[in-house]
Length: 289
Image (cartoon, rainbow, N blue to C red):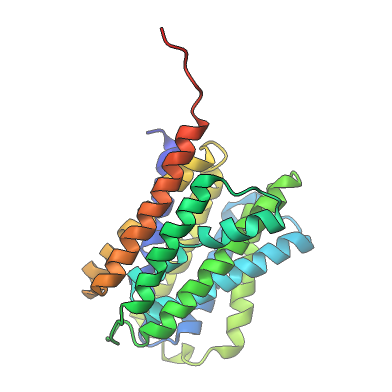
């Protein structure tokens, strides 16, 4: 495995630490954590990725705003429900990409996409019938699941927006990520309620989240994806939903409900199925001999 693929894999591992780390700042309100994490991450991306410092146009700001909504929704959802539920529900974003892609980007739905849609829909349904009980690290699972599902829609909007930017010959993914974090901070700041109560451990969690879990992860990803095919990158990033619940269990002893585990397994299986079918379709035919 070359250095670029290792960079994508490392980004996925850093992303996966978010579920556990977001719950390590108990003295801060969810919006405090979301906003401060994004402020730190924006500084990291602006500092290390030169392309992010270009002046954004309206299209980039639109994608950035959608990404900011994703950051805030996912951060709050992770504090309210289990880390596994949050990450698996957000991973169902391809449902919305499949449904909205033909309308917004005139992209046709392939047979494997329709199959993926049905598999992912079945997986997501499991989360909403699982009936998780409130715990110390998941105070309102029903609301958290709803916010996580909504974040799948905003994340799909982010992906579709980045595709649209790419069609215009623009390579502004890093700029959208940096300004998205900046917008998330600006949107959350008026609602900060417990920043003065933060303790040393809370600030350590915030530094990890901002510098490493978001900032460094995007630095690695934006530099590596230039050299790694999109399909390969997507498969390597599947390490995030695989490791996120494990980190949350190791740090917090957090156990999702059985149906939620089943739903997560279905979601991951659906994504891998789609990627696998796509890989076969893209493979050139070889003549025998």
